[in-house]
Image 1: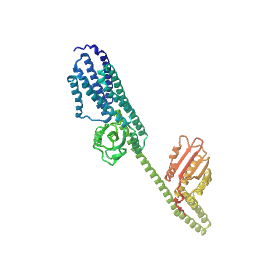
Image 2: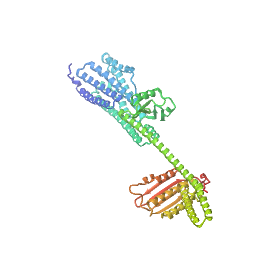
Image 3: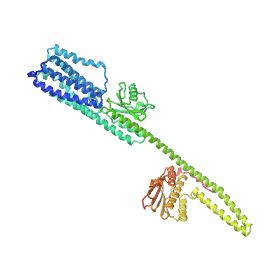
Image 4: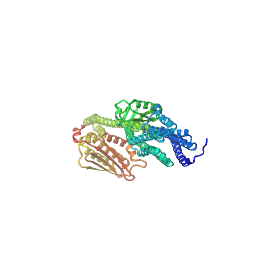
Length: 589
């Protein structure tokens, strides 16, 4: 084969070599992208630039040899390049699936190139149909990218669509520039410019897709970590998924319950049977554990449905489904990334379920504790009544009978009976003290303020504790249960002060605001012992019981302390309208 270069082809050959080097670089770039991301559109674009490289190789050999067979293959490969670029773009933008009938489009450049090279003598007649085919295929590619731009709101896609549209117009000038001798070298340089423009546009489109997908899914990952309840996790999934490119609806699906939550265009999926394509997608997703995309051609909701498996240690628990106008909201994202996201979604839902169960158990335990406190108070009330109404009455009768016997006895016997009567009287007083602790009779007979004053006097007289009591304003009508809680809280706080700060001064303040009744017990003692925190104090046996009592009536208990600052116990309880408070009060005889 004679590879000497005709003099007339020297300048054109240099331009062809330059374009071939640029095209080979684009081919290598997209081969590397395909190996990195394993996406079919990268494979398609790599094939397109590879065919383009072969086309330029054919024209270079033709310029060396002037063999028309190479010119023929140059023309065939030119048409196949346009078809390859169109196919890769349709796969990216629409998820078009291969059909063997599409090979019919490849017959045109094969057949027409033979006619144009070997059968026809008129250059314009031979070149014009091929140019129209090439320009039309490129224009359709531009339209597909423009449609994707409108659906996804992609600026990079608009940039690429403009490049393809202008390239399609440039194809039309080939017969005229070639006929006038202006194609060499300017036609090559224009083609190189459009190749770089289109290649840059594709890279920008992929980079934009990658950036938007990673941004939305990273935000979702962060929100999943902060969500604490199943409802919060579902909301985060649904809301964040709606921000992905081209997504118009989202849904959560589980094998047992089907669609458990849906929003946007997918809201109707909760009441309608999924399309066959969606069924097939879910079956494939459950079988492989891989993200999947389906084309819902007969759907009036959205043309595409994508799914990410929700993974747990024990297998696939469901899927996050996305309805959208673009083929894949995760276009440029690795399947590895999506699988990791699926595992995080599964872990977040699992943790939220555990948290919800823990909170439910906690509420059950709190309710049980409150019930135990009420039962405890009821038992104290029962014992108080029995001691007061039975034991104390029996002892009083014994005391009376001893007095009657003493009146008829000798002086020596009368002295012994008087001692016995004193012991019985002391027993009666002890019983009354016990019944007073079990059930405060002062509270029943005199009301909350008088009962608290009685406690203050008792601790002042019996324990030597310096206690001051202050009532701030008039108290509203309170229920028996609220009054008992405030009384017991005062008892416990004063008992703690007498135990841990016997030399301190204690201030008890009882008051009420528009909606809350407050009790404050503050001492100026040394504070809590070293190593004991306010939380520890709240968990102590005495205050823990008060805390449950306070919580049982909808209130709060707070304990504050600092070194040398004493201890401050504060109780706040909301109260309702006076009409809601029982009008009667149980009393003891």
